[in-house]
Length: 133
Image (cartoon, rainbow, N blue to C red; front, side):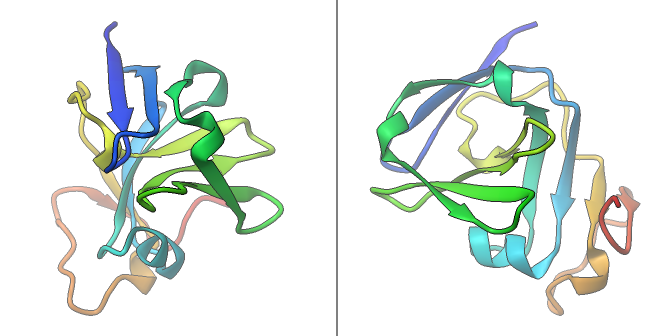
């Protein structure tokens, strides 16, 4: 299994992680759209313990979205890095920060009930009206 490299727009924050995502999907909820500034957010879930911050750890800022989730971004360039599922010990890595390509691609859409009205969802992938409970 190879390692993946990731970085923010300015390169201040750099991560490495194994190409071992537990899942990869596209979230269409309004909160992910606001956090990423895009129609949806492509994420890969991985255990927090497997992600190594190589540089810029002191530059990562966290926004406490809820008791369950905090959002991480670079304090210099504002890049959306990951959401930290605190109680589960998971990071949902924003796939757009990857500098190397993973073996797999997202295979589902969640929260399509609240998708951006102008966006057409790829019908070839599994779709869920809402997220997991």
